[in-house]
Length: 117
Image (cartoon, rainbow, N blue to C red; front, side):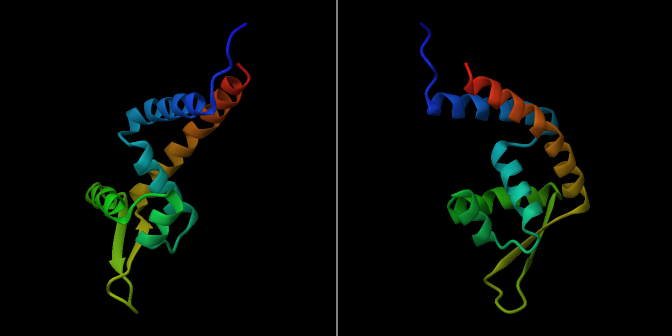
């Protein structure tokens, strides 16, 4: 009888599939997660994204810096507090989200079929 994969093995397999599916878009899974979070939360602050994704703020700050440099995300300081960084998707970022979302149905299908192995 074949052993069932552990939850950790399934998560790592799915992460690998997700990473490979994003390679043609030149996006990492963490970058995709940040973009998807900002897409779902239009008034996202850096701290909100870090908390939502379970990432430390300094790490996320570096990712956001890359996303801004690639012109996928815009950032601005909040009017009420210049320590708060507000994030928005650029037009290019919105188009990239559409492409990322196009990959998700296949990943969900692959994940569902791997759980039944």
